[in-house]
Image 1 (spheres, rainbow, N blue to C red):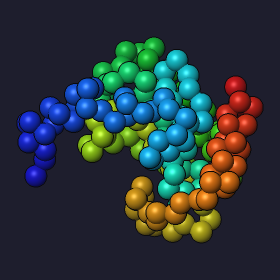
Image 2: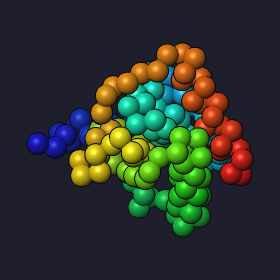
Image 3: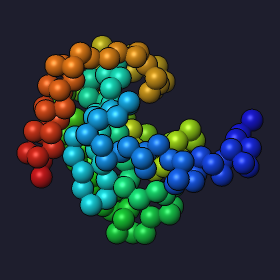
Image 4: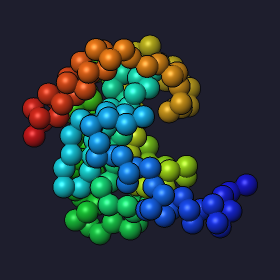
Length: 154
């Protein structure tokens, strides 16, 4: 059963949107900021069950790709591509999956979800794998590696 009309209205309301509230912060409960562009915030997810798992979050509160004009869409996907290249450089995955969902958090964002040699390629992608939380030093090191790769790709 989908969200009720009232539940959905609250979820899509920018005043109640968690991503609007904290995507720009250096750290939040779910992730750490790697980079920001005019269009997006790029964040390394705290659950590193898949090393390099990153999200690219649109700065503006929109809920669907169809709401972007052509220039915005191009800029969003350029940032997603750059994030994927940075993840590839910093974490050397075998493949990266790109997932745009938003049924739980209806704020446009793309999961940059690496698949590594140890992952089962026949298993469906599950962003809730783990959780595997790194220690503070390991997380800081991963963020630093991803930031270096992000800036090298520019």
